[in-house]
Length: 182
Figure 1 (cartoon, rainbow, N blue to C red):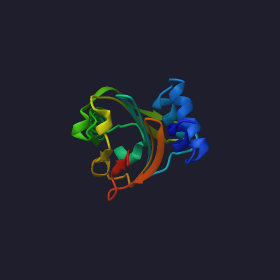
Figure 2: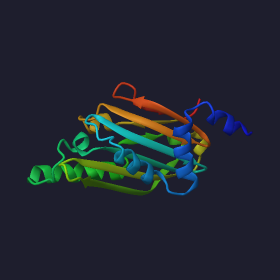
Figure 3: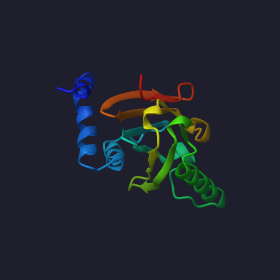
Figure 4: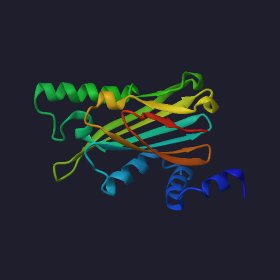
């Protein structure tokens, strides 16, 4: 058994297996994000976040009720709602809602941000960001400024997998840094 395997054995097995199975299969965080929403994670005030770092490549997947970011879930109809939706989606695409440590030298390599409406009047927002980090070992924390940019959001339930070590942490406006390494 390797040291990584021993560290993973300390965490809930189901959580680790889901993350590892999806990651090894190459499905990526988008499938994790979609799975979270499919299982009823549409909760106002909450978001779910998955972060995976393997080598110098990382992916960040955020899933939340659209109302948490936009303030509404229906299709944007007024000019004000259309502008707000455009502004918030651009903010998510740009990555301004999180900060990686400068020493890790991470840049956005790709992004996919979308809103999906269901048949019951609920809309979910998906933000998937791919990063390339030139010094990934220096990435100790991710800081989330999303609480200031989306006042409807109060909690982010974060889970991560960094170089074979998995963990979870609840984030809020007062505790907005996701600690990735000891």
